[in-house]
Length: 246
Image 1 (tube, rainbow, N blue to C red):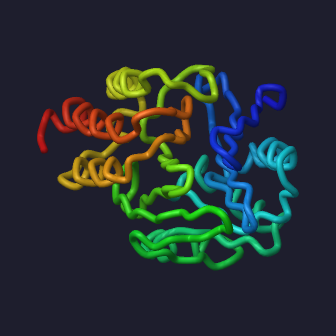
Image 2: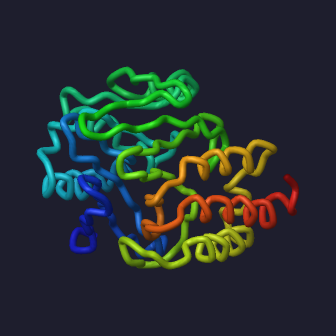
């Protein structure tokens, strides 16, 4: 996998660290913000830690990571959290209150910095707005970060799609996500995306941020009208997962 790990600057000082895993036919993406207090979104799986660490080292000294963030408690989101905390002595996990109480503060070797809904985390030149997004994409502690300067939404599993795809695209990721959702309902991961009365309002709330970049955990980072893409995704998730219910 080492030769297939790409480092791509998707916005100023914002890097995608992407590894294609053929067994899953998926790209696993991690996002590094290079700043006074560097932030890594998605620690990656424990087994992938050496790959991600070495890729981060192409951009900055891994020991200088200050913040480690992720959407929800899952192996590819935060499986290597303790490995990163060991490498970066000043790093702290970043999550919401529910995530800290139910998982992170017990699992992690260092206590989390808890953020409230819409609280801003400043890393220096960049500002990350914390959004609580329960069950979007998964789990009741789910949250996302929106970087306000580059207008980048770090959107975890939203818009996920398969394949050894390009790091960045201006093409339609909504259609890719729709195909993946439909196919996913037939396989072992059926119902992996919960659909609740909050799903549509949360997606429209994210659309209101008017992102220009959608940084996906699995697939290509989208550059373009992120607001429209999120509103279209809300419709598609309703059709595929919620039988059109609002």
